[in-house]
Amino acid sequence: MTAGVTAVVLAAGQGKRMRSNYPKVIHNVGGGPMLSRVLESAGQAGVDEQVVVVGYGREKIYEVMGDLNYVVQEKQLGTGHAVNQARDVLGGECRDVLVLCGDTPLIRGDTLKALLGQHREREAAATILTAEIADPRGYGRIIRNESGSVTEIVEDADASPRELEIKEVNSGTYIFNRTELFLALENIKPDNVQGEYYLTDVVKDFFDRGKRVEAFRLEDSEEILGINDRVQLAHAEGILRKRKNEELMLAGVTIVDPDTTRIGPHVTAGRDTIIHPFTIIEGHTNIGAECEIGPSAVIQESFIGDRVLFHNSMIVESRLGNNCNVGPFSYIRPGTHVGDNVRIGDFVEIKKSNIGHGSKIPHHSYVGDASIGDNVNIGAGTIFCNYDGANKWQTTVEEGAFIGSNSNLVAPLQIGRGAYIAAGSTITKDVPGGALGVARGRQTNIDNWVNKKMKDT
Ligand code: UD1
Ligand code: CA
Image (cartoon, rainbow, N blue to C red; front, top):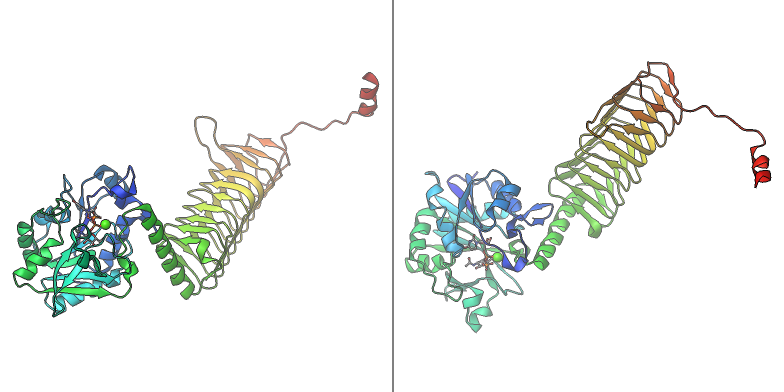
């Protein structure tokens, strides 16, 4: 916890280079809006509060991001003007202001923590997070004097040919003494190529007024990547994917082909789990130990137990117990809770249902709005008819029941303990425990029918 620090995240710009109908900061990267990633890192650094400066497309930001501490910058007059909008909402406790850009989602919480640490230790008035990059185009350049002190930041658009040669760039992340920051913001003017109030101009103002300006230079320049267009977005996605995959691999998970495996930041997986190619795992998902996931699995917001086999299937907002075997080609939809040792076969769709331990739904079935007990067998092609065109109804299948293949179970319906349903039945009435439910036309064989037909023609 670093006391007395408020984060101000700049997110009011349109991001013209994205060529999008949506504000840049809500574009997804690494499984969530880029703004969330920045806020998360600030949170990890232990700031007291976070303020988000919004403007362009803010309704869409509110929709995606929900309740946050927002301030509005009506006109996007530059990053300096944006920070100034937060002036009146900062709490009395706030001593330093951590400024972040909503479009730098690779920044790590640990880096921000180290930045704050150095700022406090050196009693600086401003500390700029910088890095050397091979291709500094588009970034502000860090100008230092003979003694190595930072004197100013010059924007790419305003830089002289000599300044353009400088490889040390401004990450857009800084920490400022609050009082000095707002003093300096009064002094800056939009007399530059872009006609904007540049936040970066406060650095020169600090230096000229004899305030201590420091740089915190990062080794890993990847972290400061700013997303201005979709090429950079894809680049950042790749970096985040690699980071997460490596974290899991080092924790004991085998990822057979990291290049084709995408795992979100809030996913955990246990030891000796193997993840096969073309798998996407997102949201708050926990996967147990010794599982085999994929190839081509999609898992969102779900809990998967230990020793689960999950092949070529999709699961959303659901839970699977231990030792389950799912797929290939099954779809488990939200609100499904599956016990241990359950087999869910190929081409099975399950929605909002509970499945007891040891039950089997091995082939070609639809199970919707059902409660299925332990050790139930659902034969191939069984359809739970849960919808009458107006309402959804429940079906209960009690422990040990056996549903013959190609049955239709028309809800609302209750199949009792250990009951049997004859294959091919359309069941519309409850079946008591231990009974056999049969509901189909009786078979008649017409002798010699084929020969007679031949004669007639
Ligand atoms: C900025 C820095 C540059 C740095 C780079 C790092 C300035 C003047 N330049 O340039 O030195 O190297 O970031 O990525 O600060 N924003 C607002 N309101 C505005 C303008 C911008 O909220 O009026 C927000 C944007 O939404 C964005 C962030 O500020 O999240 C940065 O703005 P952007 O236009 O991308 O600045 P850069 O040109 O990248
Ligand atoms: Ca930018």
